[in-house]
Amino acid sequence: MKLAEALILRSDLQKRLAQLKQRMLRNAMVQEGDEPSEDPELLIAAFEEDAAQLERLIRQVNRTNLSVDIEAGMTLTDALARRDTLRVRADAYRELAQAASISQARHLRSEIKFVSAIDVRAVQKRADALARELRELDAQVQAANWKYDLME
View 1 (tube, rainbow, N blue to C red):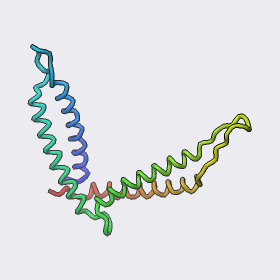
View 2: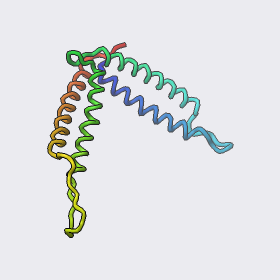
View 3: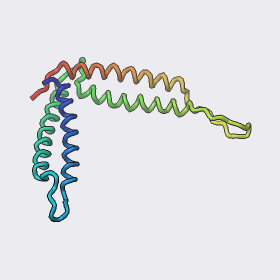
View 4: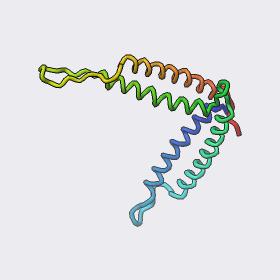
């Protein structure tokens, strides 16, 4: 199984666990004399089985991420950490540039005038550079996900 397939399976398992949890909660209590619409014990068993499968899968994904080098000196785990921080930084700079760019209409000269406290152009340029680096790194990560097999 390719790493990308395992990631898709992980996402499916996480969604299934959330659905099973909701079904367990809906069937946890019924009015005296009534039967639950689903057997809570069967739901719990399915939940535990899927949780165990998810744990095994996450361990395999993590082992694979640690062993795969997508470029010299950068494992897939390193790339994922870099991607996450690039995303946070790019978003922050984009929002900063937007906040400093908002113009306010003044109707009277006596109204308070707001001016930007930062160089919006430089901040936007920084956000664009980070976004470009993020896209390039994400493309490398996606390529690696389809290139490498999941480790046992």
